[in-house]
Length: 506
Image 1: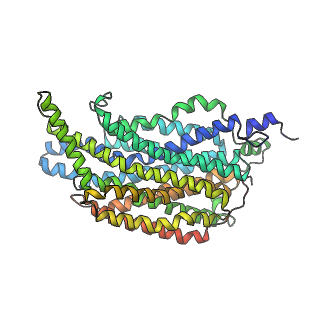
Image 2: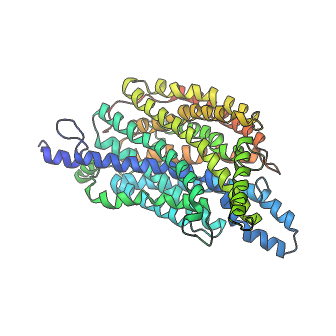
Image 3: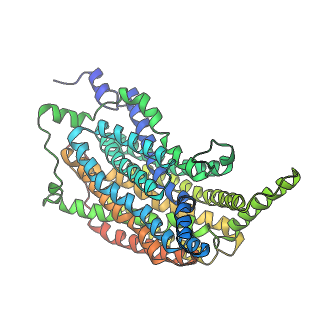
């Protein structure tokens, strides 16, 4: 029996005339919010890691001094570039990614077993409230634990949302348009986190104290609770995937199986998709996400060092005008740190603007280019050239204050050709896995590939560039090499990327 118009509107994102229904708009709104805050959370760590380690390591430094170590030696262990600092920086980058990959794979399995909507809802709630808790962390292990929960929520949310959208919009052109535009909001998330970090640094002193201080990094972490708020209101109006629900009701939905991903029919799609997905993420995490470590710090970019010194001088001048004592050395250091963080965040915003433009271009191109391999290479090949050359050039320009505008222009292009590749996967992956394995297959490619193998590029860059004191020139050069290697591997393996069928329901 044919479905009635009312039932169609309830179970699909479209009206019988082919337009977005009210339910369809709600679905797109929640998916867009989820995608935006996925990237919001992932890009947050490079902005807050330095001040977070600095503040949370203070009790450890004090304990070392009380144990007989000199204050200078204890501080050197935990200063940027010191062995303790580098160890925790690598841990905070990579351990949450491993947790997200492993538990995200389980989440993909649960998406196929329990339904797309239910898993999507709980994943967003998980990472929103974990982000809130991270802002109140009193130790590095606590911060690590809550960042692991954030990554788990993010990794599961992406998989559930992509499968959900692909199955709610059966028409190819409508599906490509919805997936393309909702994923474009991911780059809005990058702009938002950069802006949130700037605002947190600027207004930290007037915000309520957290753990006895006014640290910008804590307010930035807490801002990740925002996506839970609209979800709580809209959740009752969201439909389940009609494809999944119908197969479940009819008893024809097969049980998901990770082993089946490596069956003769799917092994090529699973392996190649996973590795090329990893290559896309490796470009970003190997180089682009290390930009705050390169531009900030005591040996960072000259223009940013000038901004930090200027903020200190302004604070001293304001105190003198009021007839007060100059701020204490610790307070001046915090002021300089917040000013440096704000200046770095304004640079990263250009990357996110580039990423947003790239995602929009991908959304248009996906409607007009049938060949998926050709579509990916439109962005992949330029990334292979632009990103390594850009970071090599940045390594030569840190002492030139006038180079900062050119760095902003370069990072805009790097973001455009790299971040656009992330949107490609949301459009591509639902086409190569059957309904009962869609969440599981997407999760394997996105989480084992992107979140584990891809974000391992950050670990490689930090490990290979480790030095005391930290050397931003070395970080930039190593980042150029790591990103270039990932990009080259991805460009080569794309030759074997399967060309999918146009449909989704199979």
